[in-house]
Image (cartoon, rainbow, N blue to C red; front, side):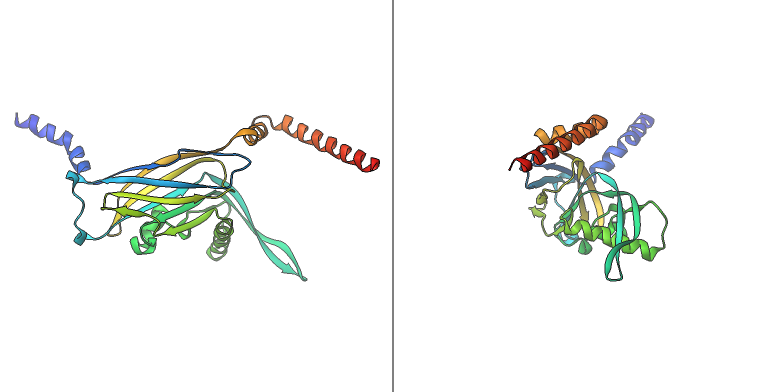
Length: 256
């Protein structure tokens, strides 16, 4: 009997240990976002609840509880070129190719991320645009790589594809949370992820992920799928239409 009880305790130990940690139950207002010709952007609501062991929220004296939400787009290869002024003319100089970089990155937090976690934790979980783990395709000295990293982040920040929203997460009663993030009109299509982190005293206590699909709809979807699935036919049709429109414009010009 004692051996059976001990075996049962060993089997249930992982479950008991799991119950000693809080659990996140996140969701998003839109799991599917469709982009049409009139798409001017969207607002994404991310919300959820924190389930604490035995239903008890932590004592405020133990430290504040923070929520960080990260929305990432699919990774893509990209070539970054650096401009240089030669004889008064701006020309392409050095360049660096990246094997993978997030096509979209937005982070919302209940407080500035630097006040929530240290630099090491930010790097591990990629919390912040300055903590993204970019993957250059070729080796370069650290100074050059950092310069191109900053350039890539700056380009995408100016286009609205990378941004931070400190203080955008609202926590109610230490249990419910919500945040709003803007999806720009120039957002790429593909499978996105919404990652939610529960943090206290600089430690990540729980994490959860929800997928988001952004895709084209209507005529834009037909064109995109044709270019992807029937590239040769798409190219021939595009050339034929260009010739046809050029001939038509020339004929009208000669008539008038």
